[in-house]
Length: 130
Image (cartoon, rainbow, N blue to C red; front, side, top):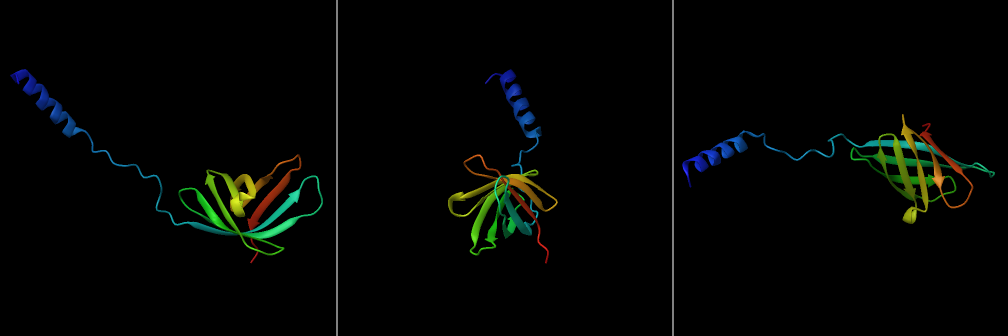
């Protein structure tokens, strides 16, 4: 190796050592999960009736949402979903039989039920009165 090549290699090695050590960026925080108990109401916009229930959700700092839904007519259904900012989506029941999309602000979900057909079903969930 020629002296100039050695000098260049040494300079390159010194420059590499001077660079900051890279670290893996944290993708989640260590914040504890938040738990909510919500009274729910589903109302068809063009139909009669109302479907009430109770939803217990756990919202994790990485955006995962899980819990249970207890309709007023009985039974327990699994809830899975996610949240990004104020936008939330939930799938309720086996294989996401009921999908809800909306916003989640100040402990209140305001959304709609996604289903085939022209009817629109509004979904609202607010902190349960205990």
